[in-house]
Amino acid sequence: MPTGYSRSPKLLKGALIEFSERFIGPIPNVIVFQYNPESMTRTLEVWNQNSGGASGADSSSGNDTSHTAQPFDPPESFSLALELDAADALEKPDSHPVAFLSGVADRIAAMEMLLYPQGDSLLGGLLGSVTGSLSVGASVGGSSIGGGLGSASGGVQPASRGTVPVVLFVWGPGRIVPVRLTSFTVEEQAFSPLLYPIRAKVNIGLKILTPKDFPTCSDRKLSEDLAVMAFKFTRKQKEVLAMANLANSVESILGMLPF
View 1: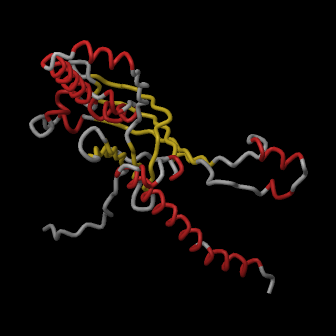
View 2: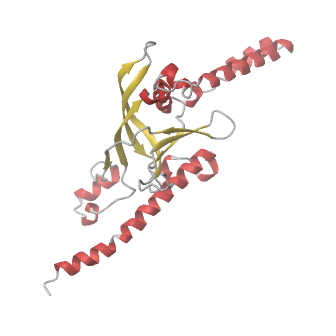
């Protein structure tokens, strides 16, 4: 008779959370990992004293402090492989209509869109077209076609630079950091009769963004404020864990003493 008690620990799944600014305020789009990757490669880059202008002069002058200089946090990046499989969902098509129709294509597309500028979304394009049509209609209705064309040609506005959405990488409570996708590779391994992938392997590379990668406090959006707070929260946890290691250091020192 089941007692409701299980010895199996509750498994937390990693995720990518996109905060899109396409609408009013940031709307989270959570991409949960179907299976947590078995491994993750992390890389921290050490500051090179010979690569930066004034800092390079320190090495030529023989200044010993240049060998220990670290003007900013070391850039951190990591890579991981995600397995996607729609086999279980296809066994219950009534409960998973999206998977029955498109396999894992929706999850692949959600991750791909993290690389695209926000202004290029389908909804954003439709809204832009409607807004442009209303502006032209207003000019025609006010008999100001010539003036409208003259003002458009007289003041050329620079093209706005597209930006990708703010993305948080969530790997349990101990690692919630803002990231930028630096690489994305998909290996589609099986297909449905409509040629949608039903099994795939996605390799992604991520770079952690720091507060200096975002605008100043007065110019930040709500999603960027959340990203900065997440970075500081994770950074503080790392500092606490490093301090906790002092207990291990004391035990190691006592073990090294000959008496």
